[in-house]
Image (cartoon, rainbow, N blue to C red; front, top):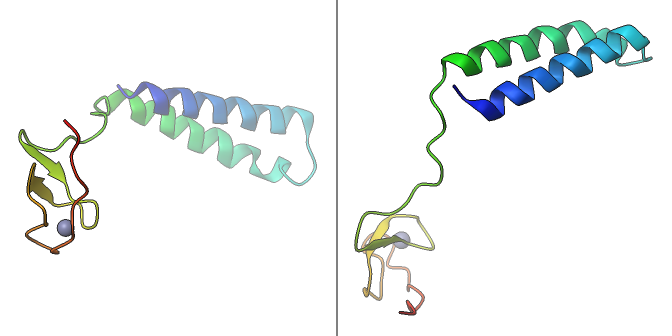
Length: 90
Ligand SMILES: [Zn+2]
């Protein structure tokens, strides 16, 4: 279950319902798509895995600041793009 998506979906359903009930000009037309889309998001979130958080480089490596490839810590240059790596403070 992906809780952020569930919250977002529920919020959109509520927003769509408010648009519909208040008959807000211009956005009234969007109230039904909002309710349907938000409902799909909320239902889909129940079947999706929780997000994994930030990607971390393998042990002893860091990501190249230019191309994002893993570079061994202590290497001056990236083997892929030859970009000069900043000094690692440790
Ligand atoms: Zn690189």
